[in-house]
Image (cartoon, rainbow, N blue to C red):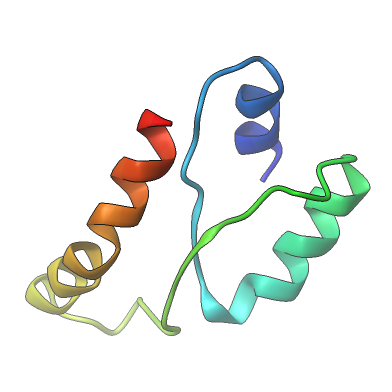
Length: 72
């Protein structure tokens, strides 16, 4: 969160990707950093037990959102 907020504050678009387990923690960190409008890209939790192919499928699902965030 800190890196994403830092870069956004300096005009560099970001797409911070988190798993759903960390939505509340990410929101709290962004708020504490004064970035109340900062939004993350959320994928389902857990990620650790997934196969390479399953992780690729998650990435495919959020790809358009990530590209949109880093190009606007």
